[in-house]
Image 1: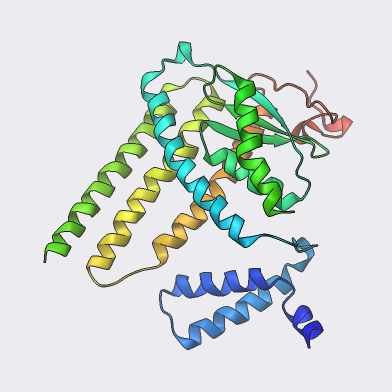
Image 2: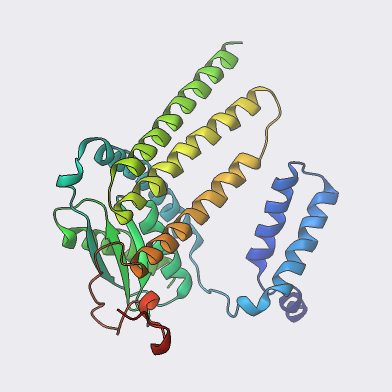
Length: 166
Length: 124
């Protein structure tokens, strides 16, 4: 029974997400739409299964939710900081810098989440990954001390992500 | 009645904050003179700006009694895709040498975007 379920629904979370997104797109919670969403949620992972080689395992949902709330708060703070920099710092005094963040995370999903978080938070854009995935290239808009930015990324986000994707 | 008035005030405040942030991101785009720093303004300020405009839309449609999920979806898609487009633009900047050359990674050979097979490398 559970093997049949695994064959039918190789990525249960993706199936659920597609069904929910479909129902929200229709803007109408009716039985027909939910059933159609579930059908789409089963068919689309089948058709695209080549691109989903493995399922991330052992994601801690509770910590993921608290991480999401932390990131949303940081996005709001980041926006105010960047707006302030845009309005007050003249071009000649702007100190952009490249920083290299050595990565301890190994799972592609975890690295993707970290890179997305870095792009959305204070004055940083993640630009590239090294060819074997051991470090992340980050561009900082305005900083006096690039090392402290790197340490903040490591302690604030990477440490939490390591706990989530353990 | 009072709830409705409060709602309209909330819509107005959200619209003001949202358009303020969008304005700041446009100023940033125009002001900075280096492609990499210019990238910072729209990726971040834009997300909260558009997020606030969508929040205003949610409150407004809830006031009219036609609650709609579409704004939530737009926010989710925006937050998922903004980092990816920023990442692509950054890679293009590195390739076109429109910015300072990034330092080499400490452990691996090179950055993955610069890791192209020999014959395809640009002659400089």
